[in-house]
Image 1 (cartoon, rainbow, N blue to C red):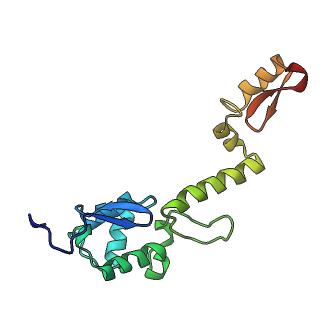
Image 2 (image 1 turned 120 degrees about the vertical axis):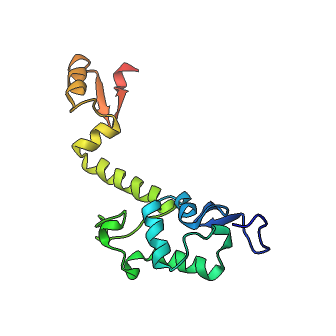
Image 3 (image 1 turned 180 degrees about the vertical axis):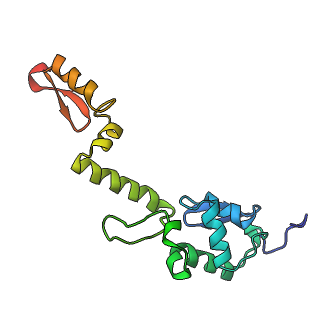
Length: 160
């Protein structure tokens, strides 16, 4: 990068609802997007045929469009299925790369689904039990007036 930035140099790019630093090299600048790591950004740059030594602020609009096309549809550009971060989605069974706000939405959907089926491992995450439900069970035997309601203990109506 030269000491003087050109007229078309962008210091901050807005990509997928994320501010990307234009002074970083494109491979490392893409990692500021949620769901895109260094390995995935490396393969995206290779599939989009973009020089990885270029700074993010030096990219043209056409090069950014190619990058975003690969990020949104990695399987069309022959990125292997094992490389993607969403394998065999529960609802549609597809392999995909989830980025930006979709990462949080998918995580929330997965946790809600696990809450519904009350999976044993998920009970530990939700706070039902410390280790394998033994602590919670002994606690409830000692204090029968407390009952369990979706991960939190509440007082029964006669205890208020």
